[in-house]
Amino acid sequence: MKHIFIMNPASGSVSRRDRLVESINAATEEAGADREIYFTKHQGDCRRYVGEICSKYEAESRPVRIYGCGGDGTVNEVVNGAYGYENVELGIIPMGTGNDYIRNYGEVSDFRDIRRQLAGTSVYSDAIRYRAEYKGVVTEGYCANMFNIGFDCNVVDLTARVKRWPFISGSLAYLVSVVIMLVKKKGADIRIEYSDGHVKDGKILLTAVANGCYCGGGVKGVPYCDLNDGLMDVSVINDISRNFFIRVFPSYAKGTHPEKKSMIKKKVLEYTKEKTLTITANGESLRLCTDGEITTQKRIEFSAVKDAFRFIVPAASL
Image (cartoon, helix red, strand yellow):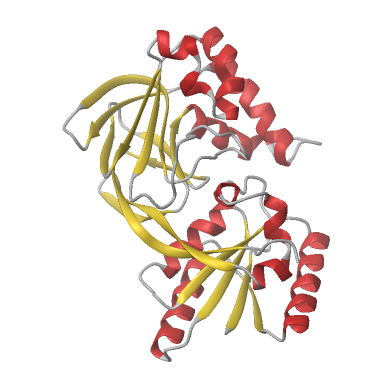
């Protein structure tokens, strides 16, 4: 079986990439595995290349394993490039700061072990199909982990800018952004149409439409997700006061907030599992975070896709 490693040059330091290439070469040579390493050239190149590889190997009736080396954005590009092909298994070697999708399967460190990746087995994972529209432009695709609107999206958006500040990078940039957004408490004004016909309309602090549990580098904001149940988990936190949210944020980060008595008493959280969902901005637009990538949209239609792709889970310690 061919093992193709796709590396995002923008993820991680040069020395870290060099060490990863050495690890890939050593592990594949030890296993006698046929390998190829491809460096992406621009945003979207990963998705394009994955699609070409999948098409080629499907035409030759050969299986292939493709490993995306990067962060959550790389996960998204790999999944979108491979969707619809049955001959491919997808793996992720973390080089980003979030790495949230893989946290659903184990420790991030497990996925950095190339030998264990090569020996791993694949499991089916769902995805979320979306159709987004803004000013007449329609965007369609698949999300592997999570969509965020409101607070979480604003944190990710700000983190990208904070990383450009002197001496701040990675997880520190995220923590600084969380503190700033806790003070600002900026949410969103949206209309949510649920699959049963129920409508929620007005200001919210945050909304997550999720396949996986984690966002923001390990924040377990949607704790009841099952990546293979054929459903999306939809978590909405209402427009609560700044002080109250600051008090409950630690439990939100740990994923224990649905059981917190104060959350239940104040009816702060609405948590459901859905097959379809539509969200529309009440104003001109909203900011949408899709697997860590930010866009501006007016209306988004979501639908759960069962068994969308096969994902490689590293073998137990070798």
